[in-house]
Image 1 (cartoon, one colour):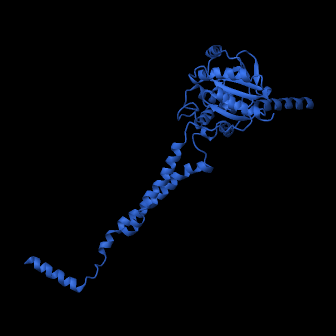
Image 2 (tube, rainbow over the protein chains, first blue to last red; image 1 turned 90 degrees about the vertical axis):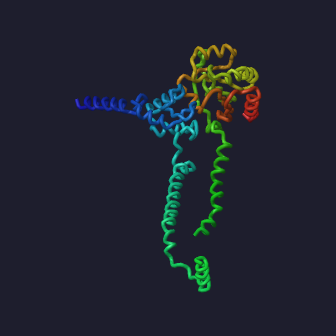
Image 3 (cartoon, rainbow over the protein chains, first blue to last red; image 1 turned 180 degrees about the horizontal axis):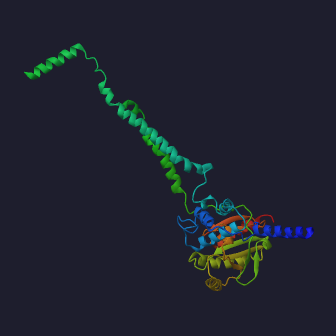
Length: 156
Length: 179
């Protein structure tokens, strides 16, 4: 009796293993397919993703994405497959590492530098009126007498 | 203060330099010219069923120089221009250890058959209905032609119509290598 039950459990476990295992035919989430397709460049289009293109090529590429996910690949592995075949050109967003990291970082560096320049300029501009308040330069006594004389001449 | 600013005025033209450098680089590069990452790497295996119903696999051709040509019947004029050159190349090299395989992509069976009849192609031609082989070879468009050496490595890729000269140059180079 016990042996029979054990055998039954074994069969059940085996069945569960088959059903849940990463066998081909694993249900594929269409949202995942779309998400991956949206990150890949449609090779026959101008500036369209595989998700957005109605072309036959893009359709086939979506099929390949679906197929690879069904075979148990992770989304990262699927993307890596396309990069392996087409190079990084296939990715619509350049990877955030190595040389292409510059593309991600430089705009913020530029923004930061621009803010610094603006801050410096604003400080300078707002400081300028104070220069006028400064004490007037000492004027030579002889010059002062000459100015007084010439103003007197004007009145005449 | 304005003295200090005048002192830094030379920075304005200097700031233009990186922009000019970027433009000089950008305008010299052809955005359509995409180098294949596959050159030098083992060619992806494939097993296709030809229009005649026979099986063609890359595995079975190991030891031969293999030319794989991706084409479509709607690809006019390039595929039509290169078609006679392909058949001539096949006739020239088929007994010299060279295999030529046509892979018909993004096409329908009927027009593809008409194309093959029109040019009397005698080398194996097979459709790639799900596009798996074309993605495995990183094909962007048609026609594209890959040259695979005897060891099964992709050695060259030609984008656009091939000519007698192009076929001869690539095939002779690979045939000249020690087996």
